Length: 291
Image (cartoon, rainbow, N blue to C red; front, side, top):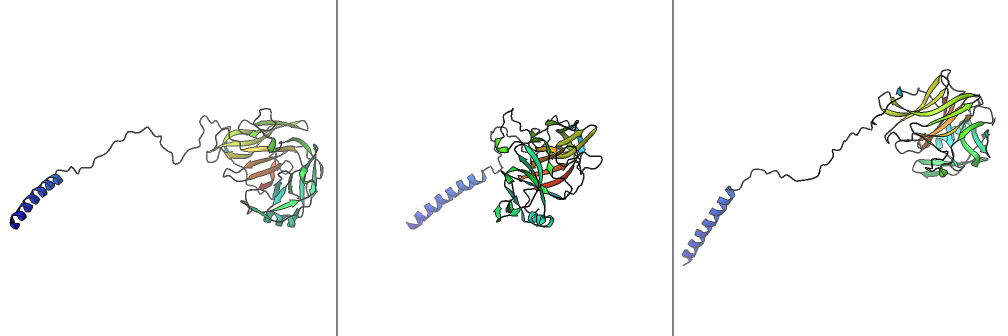
């Protein structure tokens, strides 16, 4: 009996294994490619070009001359000024600062001594709040090299405080985008400050700040245009005659394209070479805590 049952089990097991083997060898093991329906997806350019279409450069291969700007420029915010450690060391070494003050519409160049307070730290490093007389009226400060005369300063333009700036077309504030142009008259001599399209030595598209007077034309600053042709590259902060030579001086500010803080450059005509209109005289680096 046991042998009979064992034989039946063996018989049926053989049949089942036979079917399984037949099924296994009948499977198509050739790889199958599935086609999925999906909407068109634009290609992603891993190295995007910021080239602007219909860009017609007025200036080509622009380059600023290599120049040392030895003097420091300090910007105030609501009359508050702060210095970094390296700037304090320079102040102690040089010992003097000049400031442009606006007292109810009357501008003057005055010398000041600064007192530093307790250090404060932010994302850009350690700063020392400074105090001096009439700080609320100060437009900017810069290192005093002893060559400029104190006293009244002719001023033709001062940018309104940023907290009052809006997009109203009647606002006196204008960012320096391509197409920006302001004309000033100094001692019956016309000067124009404007922004034009250009290319640098590498062929990159840039916006160029130009100062013009008579038959002279000078590029004083330029910047790439990653934000498009309407990108503001700088602000015209102040225009006048700071050094008293009867020619135009100016100050512009800008924000570094990597997200840094506000920087500023003061240009003076009395320091310019014979073939130039102005020269960069003092520079601020608010976003560089290491000086």
